[in-house]
Length: 216
Image (cartoon, rainbow, N blue to C red; front, side):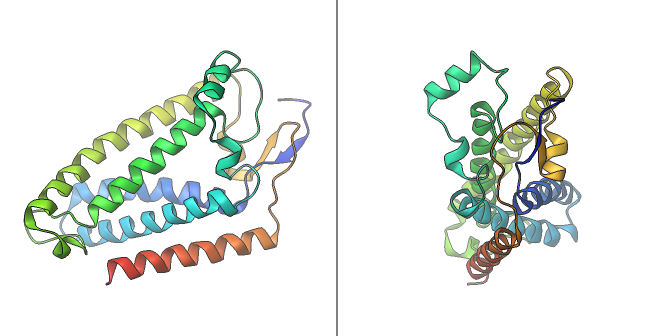
């Protein structure tokens, strides 16, 4: 809002996570549709998405003020009260937006995990497909395929909500996720070199964990 001070809301690791995840989800969808030689890139994209998701779970406990789950995960009662006073300015995710974040994270985790065991009934299969029966792999392949439809619906809902807030309510949501700063009177999030180093270390740990799982 005009006249409000500029406050650092989103730390750099959160912003890099957000936009990298968005790009990789799009790339995974496109590469799956193309198939062929792109299938290997689809797998690699999926592994990176899983590493990002593991990082985000860790960051939900170790990140800066507004990136932590404790800052935006609210009870059903809090969501209900927000619905009756949605014009109250909030730093970070609103209680309603938190539901979208949690749904997206859960759907992506399920999608990526199922993909590790899936197969295309031709020549490609997930790195862990050999650990389960053919029937189980087929069932998880079905989960992976239906998960794509769920993700498309969630992404569409997310984009519609952002557009509504931006254009109808005049709340800038995209720009703060790019710059990290929002015009709101609120305590700033920590975004110094130490916090960024913490994010890099946690992502390295998340990537190492995913690499261990997919190469075991």
